[in-house]
Image (cartoon, rainbow, N blue to C red; front, side, top):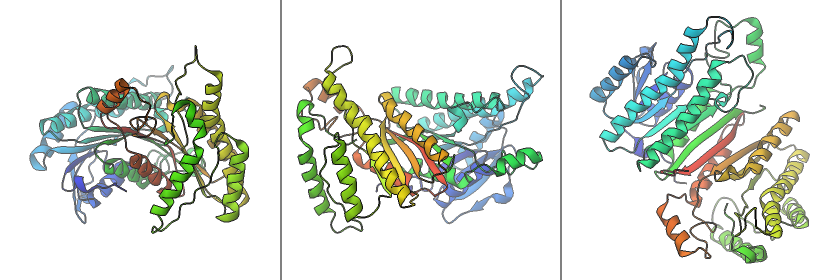
Length: 466
C-alpha cells in the first residue's frame, strides 16, 4: 500500500461549509491528519475551533456566493496561515422552490446557483491562483451529489441542475489543468443521501417528510470525509477523478492478438510463481487453471474453490481485453465474439456463480468490476447498475462496485510486446497508472463500513487529458 497523508502534514486546507455536516466531518479528519484547516462558513462556529493531535482548525466568516467576501477570506488565510494546498468545496444548499414553471422563486434559484455553482467556481479560482503562485501540486475536491449524475424526480428542481453543473465543472477544470501540464488534482465526490441538516437533522421538517427520511438508508458525514481522505492520500501520479458513494440498500489481461486465447497456461504458471513469493504473508494465494471464455471451466473453478477453500466472500472481475486489431466495419466476427465472451459474458458468469455461493451461505459479500474510462466499457457499466437494482430488489446486503480506470501500465499498454514503435513512443509520453494504484483503490473500496456502498470510483493518472 502506498496510501499516505504524510505529504500534507502542516499544509493549509480550506473547507467551505465547515461549521456542520459533511464540511465539519472533513475539517475534523484533516485536523487529525496534521493539517492547518481554514473553515469558511457564513455561520462560523468558533466554539469548534480546536487544535487536534497534530493540526489546527480556524474559522473564517464569509458567504461563499459573495465574491468580495471570498476574496477577503482567501487573503486572510494566505496572510495568517500560509498558502492553500487543498480546497474542499463542501458548502451547498438545497432550498426547495415550488417548481420550475410556477411561482416567484427567482431569489431561491439565485441562492442555490450562487452557493452551489458560482461560489464553488470563485473558491476554486482563488485556490488555484495561490497554488500556481507557490508552484504547489495541490488538490481541489468538490463535494458533489448523486443528483449531479441523475435527476431524482421534479421536487429538487434547481438543485439537480446545480449539481450537474458541478459534475461538468469538475471535468472541465481537470482538462484545463491537464492542458497546462499542471499537477493540481481534481476530485468530485458524489454521495447519496447523507444525515445532515438538509435531511434528518433539519428541525423544520414536516412530520411526513421526517417519516420519509427515517425510512431511507443514509450515509454519515464521516463516510464522505473518509472518501475525501482516501482521494487526498493517493500518490502524486494518481488522480481519483470521481467517487460515487451510496448507503447500502439503495485489467490486467493480455492482448497478443491471435495467440492470446491459447496462453491461459502461461498465466496459471505466473500466478503459481506469485503465490510462492507471497507465502510469508498473512493470507494465501492459490492458482486455479481455467479458460475464462469457457463456462464449464469457470463452473469447475468455483466448485474447486468452494470444496477446497470455502465459500466466496469477494469477487474481483478483473479479466479483460481490448480490441485485438479489429474494428466494427471490417473486423473479424470471431475476434469480436471472443472480446464479448471475455469482457461481458465471462464477467456475467463469474458474477452469477459468486452470487449463488454468497446467497446460499448467507454472506454479505462484495463484487467489484474493474471497468475502464476508455469508452467506459459501457456494457460493464450497465451490468453493474443492473446488478445493483437486482440486489436491492432482493433486499440483499451484497455490495457491487465499479472501479473505472484510466490507462494502466500492463500488457495491454506499455508492456505489450506487439506494440509498434510509434505506439510505444506514444505510450511513453502520456501519464499512466501502475497496477498497484488499482489494487490500492480496490482495497479502499473493500475497507469502507458495511452500511456504505462505493457505487463508482474513477482512477486516472494525474495530467491525463481524456
